Image 1 (cartoon, helix red, strand yellow):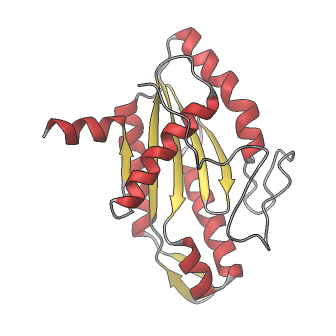
Image 2 (cartoon, rainbow, N blue to C red):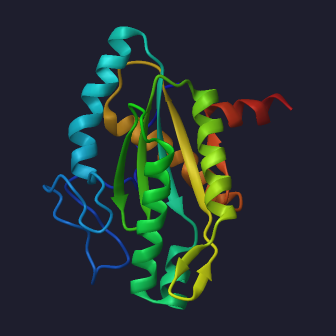
Image 3 (cartoon, rainbow, N blue to C red):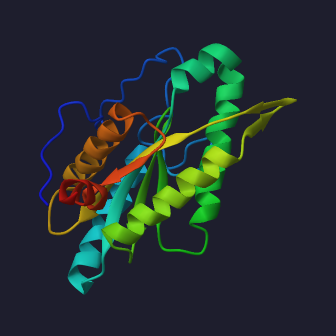
Length: 199
C-alpha cells in the first residue's frame, strides 16, 4: 500500500523531543554513543540503498518502528540514569534478536528504534516483531537492585514498491501511532489491519 506523508514524523534535520535538555547525538554521527547502534542519520544513509537492492532482486522487506511505552513516566519515576539503562537494555535485546541476519537496526529517537527487516514479508515481519514485543515484556530490566517492567509498541510497514524512505518510515509511524492509541504493548501493521477489517 502507498504510505502518505506523516505530518508529525521526525526528519533527519529536525529531531524534536520532550527531553530537550538531553538531546540525541549529532545527527551526522554514524553511531549512537549510548547504545552503540547506528543513528537516525545512518539509518537514512543505509536504508534506501538496501531497499532499492531488495526491490531490484524481488526480495521482500519491511520497516518497523519500536517505541518504549510510557517512557516519560519511566524517566519521572526512576530517573534519567535508569532510563538510559532501559534504552541500552532494549537496544541490546533487539540487537540480539537480529544477530546473524541482514536486518538493519538503528536508534531513531530517545525512546524509539528503527528496524529494516530484509528477506521477510509483512506477515513474517509482524510475527517477528510481536515475538520480540512479548520477550521484552516478559523480562524486566534490572537497574541496580530494581527490576523495571518495560513494554513496547511497534508499527510495521511493508515495502511493496519504489517509494521514498521517508514514506516507509511514515507508514511504520502511522501504524505505531495506532498501536499506542489502541492501548500500547502491541504490534500493528498492514497485515494486522487487514485481519481486523476481515472480521
